[in-house]
Image (cartoon, rainbow, N blue to C red):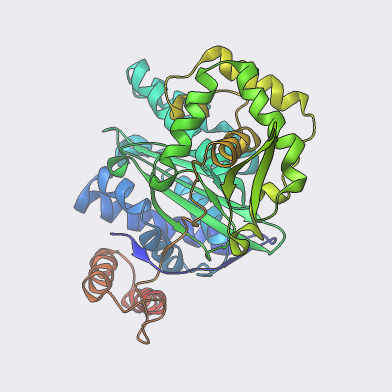
Length: 385
């Protein structure tokens, strides 16, 4: 179960001390062994996709609960904890922070070879990994740059993605979670959770409310390139003249294409969008129109299609044709279970108790001194209180 709320992660620039990382690896390995024996590999994939559980695990392993480093260090520690024993655990961890994230497809393929997985299955895992990164960088335009991408999958085919973006301007981070069993459409509300403070200014093309924009964007690139560029040129000519509405002279008539409320228009993307000549944008749009993708997912998956391309199509859809996308930030989930003062929402007692009970069962089975178990339980109490 995913829990609604707000979490703020500060950006970390330091390094995890070796003694702490080594301890996280050792303790993490013990927790994973017990989990695997009790629940099997698919349960780990399911749990790691839950931002609440992920945050709790990081805190139990003694990392700062509200630091961006929890995501990157926890992933690295878990990857190290199962190194050499991946086949015994039955699940695999690929990717990581920075340049390591770029190795994700190769790592997936390598494990596919080791496990003798069918090529279509391996290709599908690689595709899902790439699409998760593409969606969170292009369709959720929230000002966070993805710098960490980890892909978890089991030998049974379940998979999860945990990736994190940074916003250098406000020194914060945001974590995105995906879980294969919850996804029916990779480009429509695919997240199992997003942990972050909520923002006022987000172009969310994954929202169900953005479906008309997705459909119209696809329809436009399935049509004639020159017709699409005519619409883009309309925006280029008039974007600086937007006020409460966009009006274009057609002969003796004035055509009102879209009304925008003053409150909303203060931050509407069209205000700051650069519609000057862009050879790269024109090249990509020409390529996409030539390929005529069948649907929005295929459109987004094309090489070269990024934030600017989907934003341009979105604005044409909205301003010229009235298909307004969602500007509601999808980061409405949290690692928390609520608060006793009902902030940001009342405590969800069943889920609260379930989380505590799960970790307590795991801790009880760990082969460590009783005093160490008590310390872990105290940390757990701190993250769920």
